[in-house]
Length: 565
DNA sequence: CACCCTCGCGCC
DNA sequence: AAATGGCGCGAGGGTG
Figure 1 (cartoon, rainbow, N blue to C red):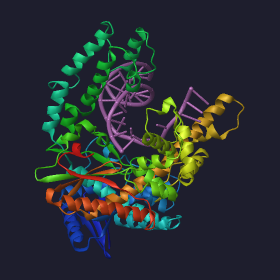
Figure 2 (tube, rainbow, N blue to C red; figure 1 turned 90 degrees about the vertical axis):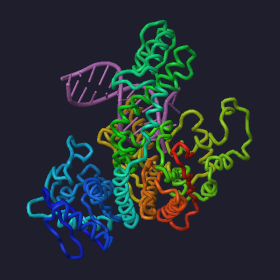
Figure 3 (cartoon, chains in turn blue, green, orange; figure 1 turned 45 degrees about the vertical axis):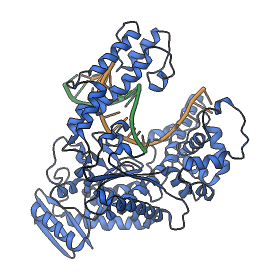
């Protein structure tokens, strides 16, 4: 069963279901109808945009199980068809369906200066006389035609369902919020930075460290917040560095370095997650960031405001379950190399991936039987680290340091897996697009890139620049096939899990390969099992029942996020 | 003053 | 010698 829901104009809403269309509904009536139809029929709701429409429904106390997000699917389809820059909104898609020029997209809701009303009412309107239901129906039919033209329509349909469900999950997570103990956060800030100071001022501990740094430079004032100032100060001491980055400073023997490193760490805490952040982002014991589903080209999520996907490890102690509840934290162990294994069908590597610690197992496969020559540079790293470098180099395109020889070894041992990413890299170097397992498609390189790489030239410098640009895009497409397929998998995982969770357990956080569920303690085991089952289903839906690759999870039911390892 | 860029670093 | 992918954010510092 399918229901179409959208905002007609200004304050009027419409719903089409089972041959009937209700028009001119006021918001309260609309909410009532959505709730009723959801309870009686649990239809697949077709929304012009979940991101724009669903938060208002959640706020009104209504949640739905299934949906089709026309904007997200339009974006995926456009990318698949090689025109990712075109409008994905309902009016844009309708114009295209009618063979007209699509109007420009309106800004996304998170980029708007003032609060939108209930649903989005601004931006280009549908043509006069066209209702939102008619437009949605037309675009939906058009999408189905376009999907049918794809090489793997069934994979795209799975992607659409997973991405649409992810959009529901994202809106719900924003509304529910991540449990966050502001009191513990405040304690931690006072502990490390000193008493609270007004915004724009340096906390006591940073003032002390800045003084120490200046003293170590002979009393001349140095601004540790300004990298150039630090570089100049070191220069005066006869130490030449190209920047003030942490990894460079670490190797310098100078009395200013220890306080500088400590300053950087605390200044980061202060500016990124200090009192200002707490005031702005944590209310009523919840951190409520805004997630953007598919906000990254590879299909990963992005977030706007609050740095939701960069919660520093030191603050995870503030993420605590409510009394009587638990946080079930699950992360997919080494997801990307496993995805590569499944994508490439490398049977040898699949055997390696049977182990929970893939890199340790890979080290065994790569280095047992290799006579160990005592090379000094190799002695401070163990085999597991080397195996990891080899694998990451395959997935990221790294060649520096010892990555080159290690990658060669990996290629000899696992030619199927390595050639999979190398073919993707070569396609990128030629300016071709590549696809994930379910059909997420990389954008084509820019015109500037084509101009740079396309010409023939005698000029050696230009030749070098062209090759650099070409290789750079190859690294992007090489990584894209893995990262985007991992995003496919976690989208399916999220969609499946969302449907399995026992009420009132609910998702509260998702980050690339990790989910957090907030649940009454007595359901924690059931929730853990739901996550395991969802992962298994996701693997089967992406790669088929015969795929031998294991996708193990680290799962823990904890009181605080900091306790999950 | 707004705007835009680079740097540096947090996360995966 | 070099040339490891994807992000968001705040501060500094320059420009108009």
